[in-house]
Length: 194
Image 1 (cartoon, rainbow, N blue to C red):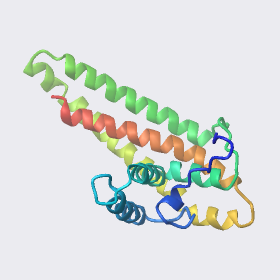
Image 2 (image 1 turned 180 degrees about the vertical axis):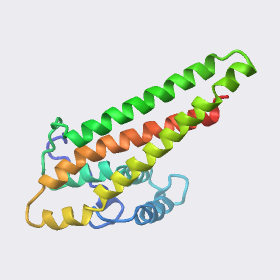
Image 3 (image 1 turned 120 degrees about the horizontal axis):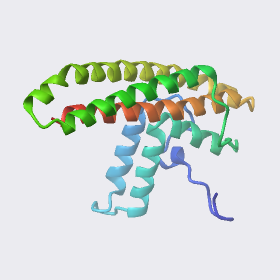
Image 4 (image 1 turned 90 degrees about the vertical axis):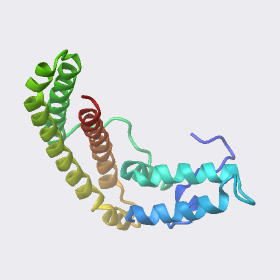
């Protein structure tokens, strides 16, 4: 919560972008790069605070869930902390949990393998776990894109003061982004641990 008399941080204003959800990441990056060049503390006339604000704005807007949450906040919409999880999301939660647990188990066994033979015996389970995580990551990315594909609809609904669909999407996006990150972490672990 902002202190009384203090302005609310607006990432869109900081990067000189109109307050719209539906925008490509490249547009956000370009706005951030322009502002970063102008405000970098090492540049002539640079401004450390402005540079920090630019970095914060970029971080918020590049995350679809962060962008949506920020957009809702700027519209004065109070976002509930807890929502009921729909059955589709609960099913996905179970699938993700099982795939991550399997990957963790294989990674743990591979790290504990003391011999080349032990590691070789884990090659097939490791490959299967990686493949499972990659497929899951692809599904999660498609689901996220389906939600962000509705951003223009949310922008239009905001003009009518309607935010229910955007709030529901925020809840879903939060899970999808978290799960995508966890899948990427496991894939990286498979690549870096030998």
